[in-house]
Image (cartoon, rainbow, N blue to C red; front, side, top):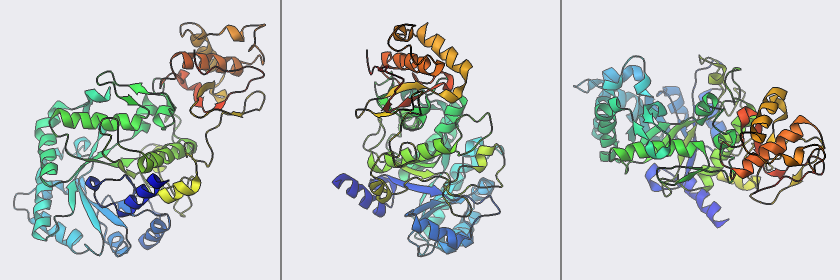
Length: 471
């Protein structure tokens, strides 16, 4: 408990990534026509214990509302202004800093400026302007005695040429000399940090046949993925993605620059082809991430560096274009009601009293079984069971694989054997899936079967059949 109290106090006093202590903040996007007024949003933030936000611009109404609120803010200079901000005379940057920063700070606690956003994938080819714009904005800050405000630029994971295994992380060759090295050198000299946008949802949704949902949702208990390059073990896709960035930075000798995750989240709704987009999964991802940040250490590659994240996003934004998921990343509806109930602060975690690994107040339980029974497992044990909603075709295909090529011990589910009854596809598939899972030492990705299986922490109960926890 002393550790938890210390972490909570550190969160409240957190002012920059280099000072230690993990922090949870939120992105406040406003591409919608039904959101509360900024003053109401500030009250919502304070009521929820959120003391750090990130904007995608430097809107005067929002910055005014944040004045003297105790909520610090990261503002942004949008991509479309980069070419102007990069001009050699620096006049545009000077005016921008005067109008959007100096006029509000320190009454409004401006912590950092995000110069551009995911510039490398900007279709308008603004990459060449990025570092010159950062330098010009910094010079203007110095002129106004505001050099304590950090400058960085959010980078998407698509900047990596390789991300698996994490130790093999490298930046795309065309970015290294032209922008990554100059930007990281700037960040080092100004004692700033690299902003990274990381979304395990995208990786899982596109590769759900090989990536375990539990691995993506921080639920891979005792099911680690080992990096063959350095032997480090990973229990979450998020940490693996972040360490791929660290490895890429180290590869070009910038392993001393800190990282802040400026966007990460999971949609509560999506199109039919957006696998994994659901309210339950969004609650599990964000809830478990928050717990991981506030109570855990760093990543396997940088265990002593705190995790600092900005969740995406505060609200569902109804005017965003693209797939359905784009409009459903919010923690709150526009009426300020929660989309799902998860703790957002250490204080809320302490009040909850248990791991929010499924967005609820109790531990994850297995789904109702054929007998309707669920029993409590010993701490740390996990099993793999069939997902009854996956459909007979998927269950049968998974069962055939597990009992055949997969090498599962399926003798107990043969007619006349101890686990033959109940004689249902779900029961038999659950036994076979679990056998395969246990034989493969509960490794991440070994309880998926194309979405036909998932990990549970409560003992599966199908008739009198006992599911093994090892072989």
